[in-house]
Image (cartoon, rainbow, N blue to C red; front, side, top):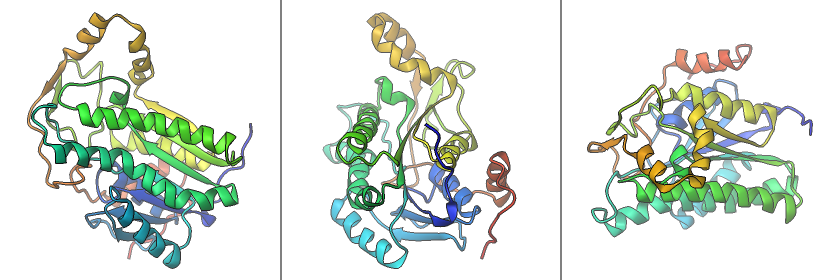
Length: 296
């Protein structure tokens, strides 16, 4: 079905975990497009821009999300695009990980998407307009040693995305509220610096720009999409139909070192101020060079 392209002048975007890593690049690229972008994060962003508004918020806690949402709606307006990006990784075995660490991962990676959706979706349904982007992961399709809690949360996000789509279509008759699922392989943001693979040419890491481009293109086209990248991610769901020894062979290339991060809570990669020229490159790739807002 043909859809009308998005009028960005009417949009308000909210990005959880937008102060670092992939979220930071998404935020800055949209801000340079003269889009109002709201960051919900527990750490302030290092980037400053006239179109970026930061709210301190622990999205793993529903009460905190409710309180901050009231501020956002009163001060900025109702968000029309929600990008659920916040994530944390521990890199420990099931036995080594503490109860609090497991709960932190599940609450941040998975339940935060429920909390933000519950507070921002009703207005989207009312207007039959909006877009919810769920950032999952390639390994949400296959278990991985030392990442049981992380993989579980990402696998659940795939089911969350699908269930949300069906509820919008079949329960709320809000088919113009779009949903996009993003399942990238390893992104070079620093989040998985302790992971080494034997065949990087078979499982290549992604540059953040490679992931940002299709996300913004999906938003720009105002279409629901499933974004699986790079190429091998499209085959990962098929692993479940293969014998177990194939699974074992596929995971023999995993080798973990210590995963250490500067932030004990949301480890979405090293806190990075994306260079203005890098964000502009995103816009150039998307054909958005005609309208770039200035920095403060």
